[in-house]
Length: 349
Image (cartoon, rainbow, N blue to C red; front, side):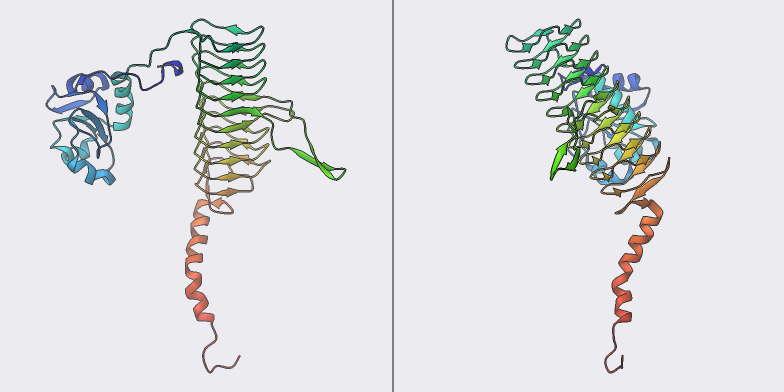
């Protein structure tokens, strides 16, 4: 499924036997049970497909009303009451495959809405759809089968690749470059000026930002995320990286391929982030530092220096995770330790 086919769409009806065959699972129970939707274990009904992959959800699994459940072999006995069980090694992967079977892509009609504003010298690929009140600036190029939803704004000379989705209210400033199969969720802002000033003559003088914001192919940007353009060079988000909602990426940041950045992360300017880095929610990264490939940054960590490749850092200020745990453990013992140091009654100082 391409990015331009994403969406809830309409659902199909599938039997447990058909689903098991499609995902290569082992069917246990009634293969004629039919489902039309997916749901969590706690909210599923007999027409729902769910999955059970961890014993931490045993309570929900024990009372689920789902008609069909993907389950690992060791956990299958806990859902013996479910009409149909499909035993697989990775239930979440099986659920992902089933979603593509159950939910048909949302149909869309190529073309330009009458209320859209299209600038001079714009190039539109085959099958492009541009929604109501969207604005496409002079010199833009939009690749085949890409959808620009209502109210989105593309500045001058923005390039959008093939099979992309730009959701309502997105703003891409002039010169922004977007690769193929990119998804930009509603309200995201790409290529605004970074926070760059030099103090002189008694005032903060703005540094002109003449670089670009570049999203490589297969990137997804969450709702209301902001990615600043570079001041001189480019701000670059590497191929396959996924960024959650409400993330701030500063100017000149270069983020590698296949990174995951969770909600409310702040990344200061000129930070270098290697391939495959994971940054958990509300972490903050200082500027002009390097995060090595494969590193992990824990939630709410405050990172002020370089993180070596493959390491996990946590805490504030951030440090290697095991060290951070020792610091936290020591801090919890401080109240008791202070009591032992308190002056004793009747004892001279």
